[in-house]
Amino acid sequence: MPIEVKNLNHIYSKGSPFEKTALSDISFKINDGEFVGLIGHTGSGKSTLIQHLNGLLKPDGGSVIVDGLDISDKTVNMREIRSKVGIVFQYPEYQLFEETVYKDIAYGPKNLGLDEKEIDARVRHVAEVVGLDEKYFEKSPFELSGGQKRRVAIAGVLAMNPKMLILDEPAAGLDPVGRDEILNRIKLLHETEGLTVVLVSHSMEDIARLAERIMVMCDGELKMFDTVENIFSRSAELSSMGLNVPQACLVMQGLKKNGIAVDDKIYTVEKACKEILRYLGEVGKC
Amino acid sequence: MLKDITLGQYFPIESPVHSMDPRIKIIITLVFIIAIFFIKSLWGFVAVALYVIFAVKLSRVSFKLVLKGIRPILFLIIFTALINLFMTNGEIVNIGGVPLKAGFLKITKEGFYSATVMSLRLVFLVMGTSILTLTTSPILLTDGVEKLLSPFSKIGLPAHELAMMMTIALRFIPTLLEETDKIMKAQMARGADFESGNIINRAKALIPILVPLFISSFRRADELAVAMECRCYRGGKGRTRLNELKIGTRDWIACLSMLTFMAVIVLINMYL
Ligand SMILES: Nc1ncnc2c1ncn2[C@@H]1O[C@H](COP(=O)(O)OP(=O)(O)OP(=O)(O)O)[C@@H](O)[C@H]1O
Ligand SMILES: [Mg+2]
Image 1: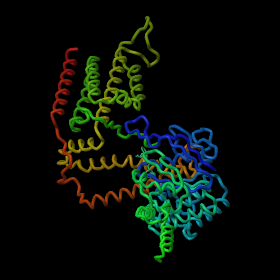
Image 2: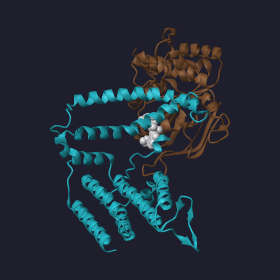
Image 3: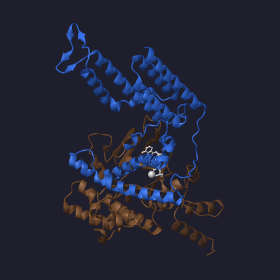
Image 4: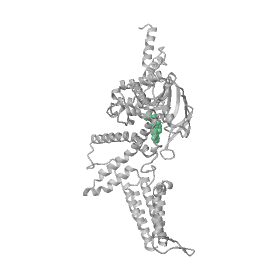
């Protein structure tokens, strides 16, 4: 289910003194089964962009085509699009409202008009996917810890069975173990079920580790959309946009600059480690 | 979506009216309102119109915005005008020898006159207060109200507390709207539908918005209270402020213009 965005513009509070162009002339295409990272400084328009992908915001210009359906088209059923493209918002735990965790996860599938059996199967499946034990099902979502709430909220979106999952900083405010766990589960979902994922994150390390292609936004424009290697090899441009590259990348680039013949197209710690060991082995120091 | 509702309607630009002291603006607006209720002749309204046009020009706010305030009460204005037009006793108007009278409804000269006067009064009332709210930020407005009410704190009126409550409420309305917007979107992403269905279904559809909204409001209120206490907030007694309100030359000139206006109104009432 590809998503195609053509010359998308979005202006907030059009016509008032607070008018603000949040997106200007954005075009790209995301293919089936891709894992795309979306980065950009605060206020660069990331959240605005992703809300267009399932029709929560309507374009002020240009078009968004989801699976062949134009979201500006009045005859298109929005529920259908929203069941195809799931969005997990920043701090999604603030959307929880039901009496029990089970009911909250079931809210989405219920809105889709599924029958009880199907709903039950889905709730159990997604709870397992996000690593939520069944013993929590009858608890109130408000009794859970922050990380558990986050899982319930993500499960609630996954229960819609979307073909594409968009996550706006799913790991913000979690402890290191919690964030790795959640991100790894998303990666697993992408690998096992072929889910298309768009991950918004401020952590270059996470993006480097997980994504296949990266979109870089700056002041409402899409500046780059390329493979991870190509993006992080342009570190000077990135830092002029207020972004950095992963630490491992900087180390390798620094080594190369100082005449040590290592591969500088490396962006995760593990690979950097291997490459340095390889180099040391080669020159016979190790 | 929800953010498009502008609150208060403050229009943030720079002008001599914007930079006036809020207390003076409030007082002038009050005097203005009282004045328009004393006006009897249509000439008085000419003076009022001139004064309003002058104030709007000076405030650099567009006329359209000032007039926009009338729309919500348009029904009230028309209703008042019709009641006055048809129900006032007096000399019945004849058109081509046919008296305009049907049952208890009649059009009289007096009715026509009082309908006009009442509608003009309401229109100018709204325009006058619109100029005040368009040119004064809500925070300055509450500051002004607090200062004006503070003499009454001697007889037990909690002026500071009232103003603080107003300030906090005003401060959090945009936040709440933003939050509502966010929660609505999150639930819509889970297939919620707020637009279709009958009344009961629609009311039910609000639960997924209201519950998270209430919870976060209580959390916010709690956090705010703690934050205020941590910074030793103890109520109004002995508090100084960062920006003291100051009455300057501009404000005296404004007062002078108001006095002139009042004098003109009185003269018109006496001689025209
Ligand atoms: N509802 C709104 N009304 C008006 N302006 C808005 C609204 N939402 C966002 N903006 C503005 O649009 C711009 C883009 O905001 P957006 O939330 O898309 O940024 P972001 O890239 O997601 O930032 P962050 O990394 O902080 O989440 C910002 O300058 C913001 O001030
Ligand atoms: Mg954002």
